[in-house]
Image 1: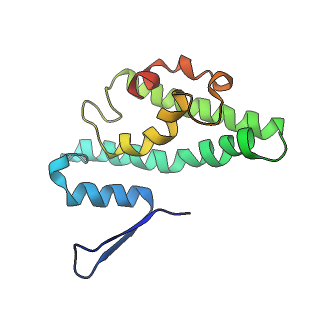
Image 2: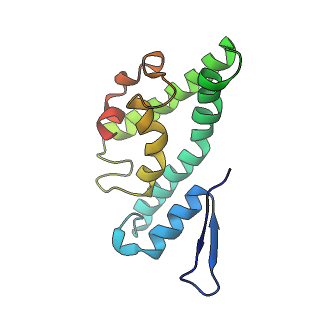
Length: 146
């Protein structure tokens, strides 16, 4: 399932699909919200983290989440494989957030909006019942951000 929207405030209406594209579209349409930096380097950082989420979250949801919580049979190898990748991703986030209030610095951006539902909810123990298994409390900077 792919998220989609139709902006009927434009003529003709503008079709936008996929979460990253929707976030960029809305941030550009409503610049007063300041969710997408204008300055080149900050914008590149924000878009890089947005793309990181789009590339990483499938390993968390479709990989780890599926095999840990939803697969009809518990299989050790895929659970361990995707748990290792999920922990690696949490470590990447933890290192980034050790030096930043938000994903891209001191400003809340579309990168935070995209990443939080996956990793914020995970470290708050709201996804998959896997908090202890993944040692989510050890990612202190991600927990603080969440």
